[in-house]
Length: 142
Image (cartoon, rainbow, N blue to C red; front, side, top):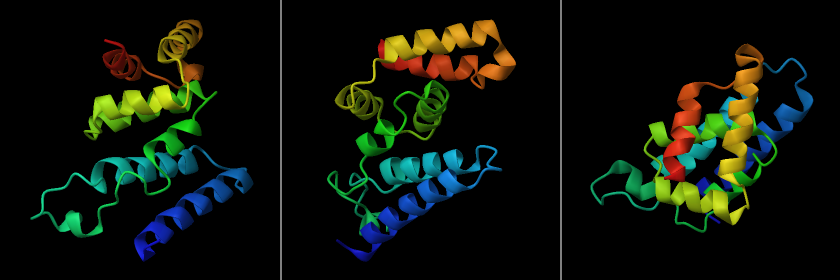
């Protein structure tokens, strides 16, 4: 394990620990974990051009945590899942890769999207999700 791989693992562990002990959390730690997932997948993925300064620190597809590891943590959290999908696509995470990660961890995106839509219909403010997030998830279903 390289120093950078160890740093990524340590950052993820620290964010998870803080999320479990910080009772005043207003979504900060979830956002931090989402940021790490996007950075790992989109910015530090192995498909960088050789001239890119990021190429020197890019991780291969087996470096843990993987996209699947981050997505697995969102099982049962429709609000976090919809937010993650929308942010991931906005940051140019490959939609095919994202859909594969959902399939690998057995997340039924149709079911989750239907639940999100129902929650938004019942109470848009308390649902904590937006129509933009639903639209982003819908692009993965086509």
